[in-house]
Image (cartoon, rainbow, N blue to C red; front, side, top):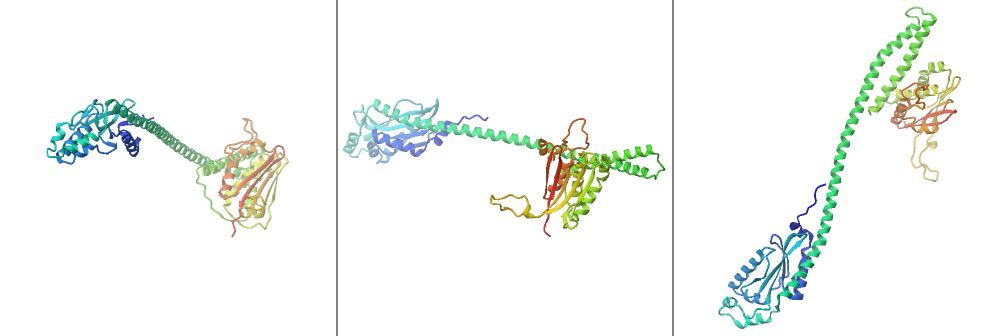
Length: 459
């Protein structure tokens, strides 16, 4: 933290209001008939009670008197704050000064006077000689009307003035230092916060760079793997069809195994490619008007071979009169395909996976209500595509994280079902990019139901 050491000699003008100081001088002047002036360490006048002494007022009527008086006052003003003892004027009046200090720091001085000292017995010749042709009776009257003050009384009054002033100054100084400490703490906190924000920004930039590199790496590796894998699957199909010659039963079984595993690997690579696209924020939609029944048929057809191998029946119930819907067909087809693929994997042999679609009117939308059964926001009709299975189901504690990337409900080392745990994450991203959402309900041992809800934009 920056050190807090305010310059008191400069801060005095910031600590005490000059009008208050002037009032202090005026009050003491009226009580004891002694003028007071307060100077800072540089000799700047801060406050005064400027009432003229009767003797000074008379002597200043002449030019020599004014000159002599001003010269003496200047010498008093220029005396160092620590200079002790009185300073007598040529006319016999006296000035005194007392230093002002706070915490051993010299801040300035208080000058008091002029006043007529009690021990003065005769009018000084210098005062009479300033105006040889003047009225000496007026001079005697001026001296005679002035109040005589002894040094002990003047010293006590000067000390009282200084005590009052220093008390105000000390209170103001405490508040000043407290404020400076607070500002220093705020500045330090701001500096630390700025430094932390800078470090956080650098860490965030490194993280973003790492994420970009990771996504680019995944996309590059997936693309490089998919290209030769497509050839492997294609040649496996040609061998199975006998294009390369007749195969024996055992050879055909081997080739079919190669093709099956190739298909599984291709789906895994495709999932990684899809995820890398959504993860980098480069997801773009190409919406066209689509017939939902055809889109779902294509999605289900893609998974029929897997269903046949696992002995799972596929049921599709899509009304033929569903309206055309504006969406990205490839993204939604991929989403439905992932849901059907998951449903098949977690179904028991002999089980059923049912795919349905319908239009849910706006009156059935699940929008927020105002407590009186009135929907606060008008919602469009929704296209609902549901995929229902009757398999193992999802435990309640796992429902909240099924859409997290790389999440598998069965994450043991001997888990039965393969995959990278990206399918549902991709579905969520694709559907939300269309302004929709995905809901899931499930119970262990009873199966799961995933529902894609997409807004139907009015034509």
